[in-house]
Amino acid sequence: MANDRIARRRRRAVSRARLSLFIRRNALYIGVGLCLAVLGGLFSLGLGKDGSTPPEDAPAEHSMDERLQEAEGSTPAPWRQEAARRTQRPAASTAAPLTPAPTLTADLTPAPSFSPAPVTERWNPPVDGRLIRVYSMDGLIWSKTLKQWMTHSGVDIAARNDSEVRSVAAGTVERVYNDDMMGTTVVIDHGNGVKTACSGLREDPPVTEGQRIEARALIGLVGSTAISECAEESHIHFEVLKDGRPVDPEGFVLLRRLDG
View 1 (cartoon, rainbow, N blue to C red):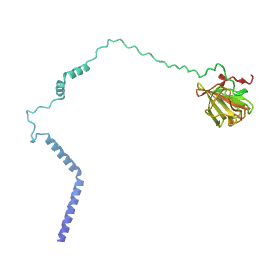
View 2 (view 1 turned 90 degrees about the horizontal axis):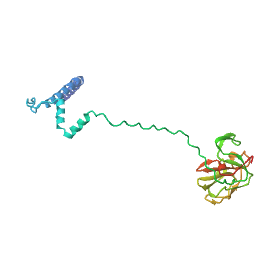
View 3 (view 1 turned 180 degrees about the vertical axis):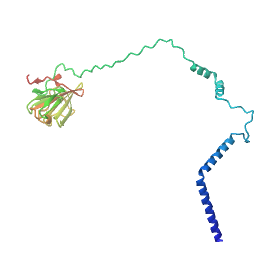
View 4 (view 1 turned 90 degrees about the vertical axis):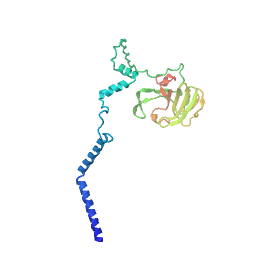
């Protein structure tokens, strides 16, 4: 009995192996046969329910032109009128020809450079001294200290060390700070967008930020804290700013030049 069971198992294994080999060798033909079977089934669905051909009295298939005519006939009148209107050739326009729009030409004239109008009466200078370096933002001037040509955003007024430096007009002290290049600096807001700045003062000036001061109030003493101008003779660096931009202080302050 045991031998019979073993023999049956071997026969089943051999049968499965032969079937697998047959499928691998004839996979193409099997696939084609399945496709044909599917197509035949689809074709049979196109016949009558009982598998017969359609009856003779069944409506014949319409051509494309006939179906378009039927659709046109079923279209509501307003739509047909609109379609006809669109297909008609537009009549020649009798309107007057349009005048071409004028050509816009860009104005390439350069805007005038900013130059604040000087005050009616120029203020007295912050320190009693001579003008030794002028304002020059449009050109370069020589720096003895830095050994190079550069712009100059203010004027330098020569004066002895410890000379008194005073506010040119009434205002509010906006900043008191030590600049790395220009030394101890006091900025005063005079209103109407005008501010003045005095640099190169001695340390610890006698004013504080937010302090309201009058014209000719003492704001510091001439020092030697301006590292970037230390090769010049003793002086202060004085600037005027209008709306945040440096302008020529000689338009606001009466200064005495070297030859004056």
